[in-house]
Length: 318
Image 1 (cartoon, rainbow, N blue to C red):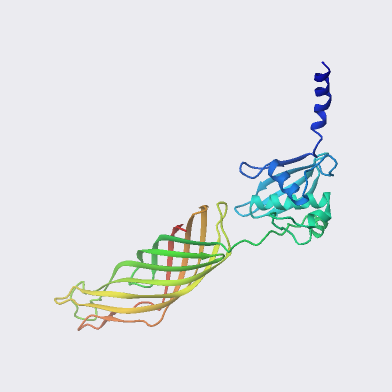
Image 2 (image 1 turned 30 degrees about the vertical axis):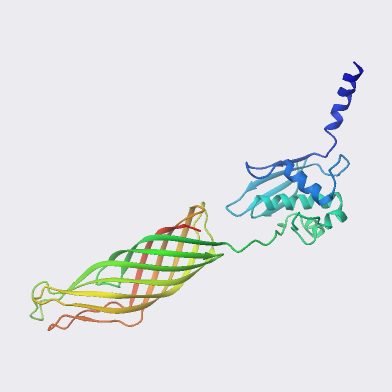
């Protein structure tokens, strides 16, 4: 009987062997054990009831690349400190360093391996309760995507022209390098019959095929909740392909064309690996060829300035 009494008497004391420490976060974002292990690794010893911490760490995600943890007093629920990072794992390290510093500043400064260093001066971090905690540098984001888009062009051909493009996008941090190839559907231009003796319906049918390379800066990154913004500039090269119609001996002619391209796009990422995008480009021609139908003279010349609307998207393959 004495044995049973001893167990009952000592059991409550076990709950006080270590300080209260709770990690409250979404599934997959660490747990109490991970935080406790990180603190003990910094201190080089197990936590005890004498350690002056009693904290509830409440984690939430704010956007694709921002995680926030609020350290609340376990006694009255008051917010003691707010930390921010770009991933959940960095928050665990940052929180562990702040709490270890509270227990023993000298031991926490030693930074035992393999715990990564999060701040250079924990004391300065504690002195600014509302300032985000710096996090270790990460590798520059890099991805490669392929995609396609529907095009509506005004000015390149004799009439508003639909078309399609294919695209490869190399993304390095906030810079996109793009290579495109595309085609605009055939549009026609006919000679007027009031001043020349041209057969009815005589003229040319013209289509365009070519490609472009451009670089786009993204001052605003989009996510599932909002679109981003990309500003682009580049060069387009291609060919206008014309065929005579409405005459007894129609011919064919090709003319190389180039243009400078500036534009803007609004990408939206419903999921990490997919970008949907609406873009608007302005093209300034580097020379304007003319197409004539002998013996009736020049039938059509392209506009020196054209506009192009694109609607499409791309999928990351790396």
